[in-house]
Amino acid sequence: MYPEEGNRCPAFELPDSLNFEIRLDGNWIMVRGRDYINSSINANCRVCIEPDKNGMWILGAPVMMGYYSVFNLDTKQFGMTPHI
Image (tube, rainbow, N blue to C red; front, side, top):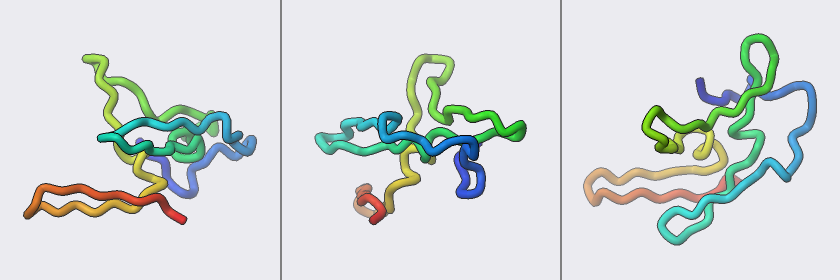
C-alpha cells in the first residue's frame, strides 16, 4: 500500500527528524517522513519502505511523493525535481 493524501498519521505532526536523504547517481534526494509514514486501516502509523525477501530496498511511491518526475523512453532518461 502506498501513501495517499488522505491517509496520513492523524495522531501527531511528523517531525523533520524523520526526514532522510539518499544519494542517487551523485544527487541527494530528500525523503520526508510524511511521505513514507502513513496510517493503516486501524489508524496505526506504519512505515511504507521496507526491504524485499532478498534484502534489496525498492524505492517507489513513498520516495517519489515529494518529486515531479519525467521519463523519456526514447532516450532512456529519467529526471526529477522537488515539489515547491
